[in-house]
Image 1 (cartoon, rainbow, N blue to C red):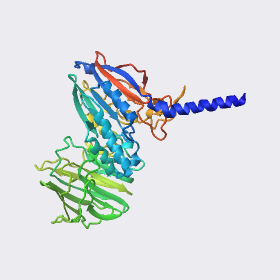
Image 2 (image 1 turned 60 degrees about the vertical axis):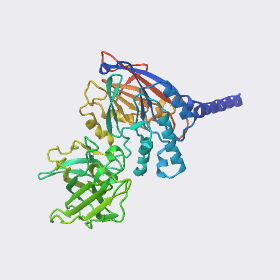
Image 3 (image 1 turned 180 degrees about the vertical axis):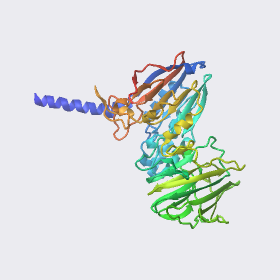
Image 4 (image 1 turned 90 degrees about the vertical axis):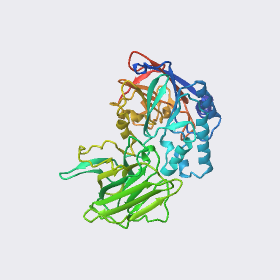
Length: 503
């Protein structure tokens, strides 16, 4: 009897494993949800939005083809993809490999096969980045060859069925407070400055321009100091970090290269006058002036750095001409710090071609506060108040954010619906218990489905693919179909049970 029972348990276990590995990961379900709102009163017809998440595409195979066919059969107006298109971030470490090239080609093939009347919109997830940020740019370049649009810390108005929707997308913060630092305003009796603490990795803050293409042909000046010889300090210009690209010019001093020098990212300048020869002393202010100009075939860069108590040099110490195919022709400005000590930045002035002052100093900002329009590029949720500024309450606004933890940051913002993924629904769920693990601060109890807070809604998609182990159990892959309809009341939802947001 005991042998038979043991055998039955063994066979049952094998059946469960076979189901979890071979059947459920391919058991694609369409979850249908209707949202009605008085903010959608101008709709002439219902709007269909399909959400996909956590695709983890390794190659374009049968599973991906089935997803495409099911999505296209739904005839959506919009398709929204909330991150993790890539199988895993490790492939970015070797962008020359065949595996990486096949993955990029497969993502392009997948996106080009999707059909949506009013567009495909994407935000990146944690597996769409790597420590090598320049190779992370390759995903954006690949998607640029498709019909899809990546919303990298960006807002877009969509006209659909006679009404207007606002889509906001933020990049997944690819680094955490343990390794980078934030920037804040510090004041004393004499002065106010933008300040950062020590950080293990590169930390950035940038002025977020209202018009991304207008920043060109400008002069950037200011002053900076640091408290440790083991620290790194510098400034960036013609930067595209606000667009999600690791591309910028930078003047910096670093422990491994202490002279202030020109250090570009995303483009290359060779054999020119790139080193200022100025080695900064600790706790000493150094002034800088950078002039950047576009010509028909190149970008010209001139810079000088000097100790505040000295006279400004009459000659440019750094002179460079970037005529490469990857040269930068516009972009915002910012600050950079790394390693030990404190870092201070002040009197940051930018003059455009018409001598218009773009930014001055931090005297009128309350101590400890983040200066408005300065965004720490390591923590993209900081940009939400800026992106939602000016959004009218009568316009239905959707936030695309890979991690549902972002919902914790949206309480007082005019956002009606947050679409997220990242959790895979737990990927493995046990009967009567639910998800074992969720990868989020919200916890396993909030790893899938709809959650309501006042008049805003969070929806967490279970995703399409798998990570770590290719297994799913009581958590099948999901395509979500949202149907938006007009109503006389604020946000209402049907077709799915809605839980209260507990945090």
